[in-house]
Amino acid sequence: MPALEDFRCKWALVTGASSGIGAALARELASRGARLILTARRRERLEALAGELGAKGTETRIVAADLNDPAAPQQIYGATEGAGLTVDILINNAGLGQYGAFCTNDAGQELSQVRVNCEAVVGLSRLFLPRMVERRRGWVLVVSSTASFQPVPYLSTYAATKAFDRFFALGLAAEVARFGVKVTALCPGTTESEFFEVAHAGVFRSRNLQAASEVARLAIAALARGQRTIVPKRSGRLTAFLVRFLPVSLITHFVEKGARPKQ
Image 1 (cartoon, one colour):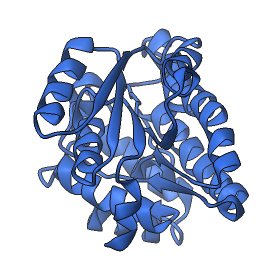
Image 2: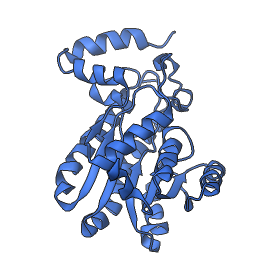
Image 3: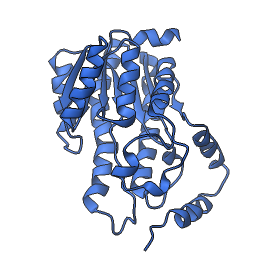
């Protein structure tokens, strides 16, 4: 697709690049000729991915940062755009979840979801997007989820943060389109990643996991053509369609019964 050529030699910043969809997005951008800035908490994993991409000729930088820290967005900005690198592609991928009853879940992890999934996305976008608008060129991908289309009991905070991400991306897309900047909300369904283990959410894991590489391929193609929402999994597209016609109370009733933790 010709639009993908626009990414060649551009600097792309990928958050949560140490595994899963983030690493797959980095590989996909590298295959399109982009230069990569990889950021996540786990430096050793970033170094391994940077080594892999570098061996294939991709120029790569690393910024180890924890987006649970409110100072991290400014740290990342200072090490990249603030240090003279022109970041034309911002991939807001970092995120986390936590399965279980809200009243008994770890309170710190509930708040961390809001900080990483929402606050950090806003903070990074606010730092990098104005420069894109000034240049009349840029791309922003915000990783949401099919969980953003309806409340999800026992992933209540996670689903709410992903709804925030999707609406945030759609609002930004409308604001900056006239400046030549494209914003896309990526809404993956169940995907091969560490999410289920980290969030202890195996109850939501399906047998038909979509490969992270496939999610990344479809996402980057959608970003290149300026598509504002991409739901890469067929079952996710069906869910997003059906919930428009079903009462939320009915959806949450059945999800709650099916997902309720075993006593």
